Length: 108
Length: 135
Image (tube, rainbow over all chains, first blue to last red; front, side, top):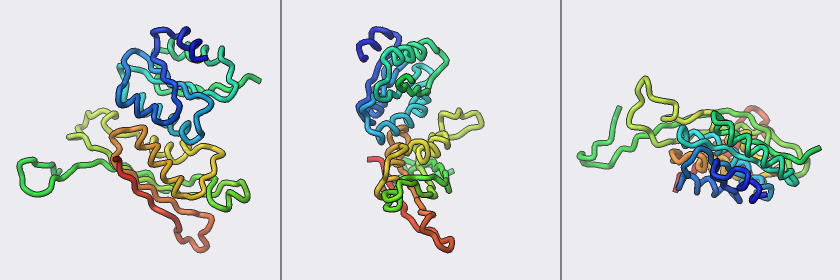
């Protein structure tokens, strides 16, 4: 799924795959440039870290604005990879959108 | 407003901005009651958060120079993960502190007071206050 996201987005976004809440600290320490930073909160992240990551998206987006947008995909177990890619492409194209978190759950 | 004067003798005075969000009532899975019943119990949560203060606030100072109070409210409500049981309310307080430190580097100190409403019999406030400073 990581490869599919990278292939779909190319240079349109910087992908950050968050294993835990420290991913935010890394973003703050070395904010990437470019139009969009897409934080991908994978399904294996603990509930506590997930909650902190989601809570950080809004304030961090404000800190990075207006030069860089920040958005996040919050992935549930067994989320369909094509749905994840579609959501990522939407966020990459939505040039006025920042600070948003899209929760991707399994179909059905 | 008093400002630090680097040329004067004596300890430096550090300006700060304090944001307050008090008396949030939040249902949280915590303590023995929740462990046994799997039901959340009501907590009254108050936050006092210190930030690094900008040099000056002018009439046209942008919003970005302060912090959205809703970030504090969210840290004590929606940022508490659903379904996670916190054995101690101290852990609830620490999660709130960590959430605020993580999301905004301007936050220097977080004070969280939690009152356990369910154990009050005559309106008394019983709970804890946790203070964490950024290290």
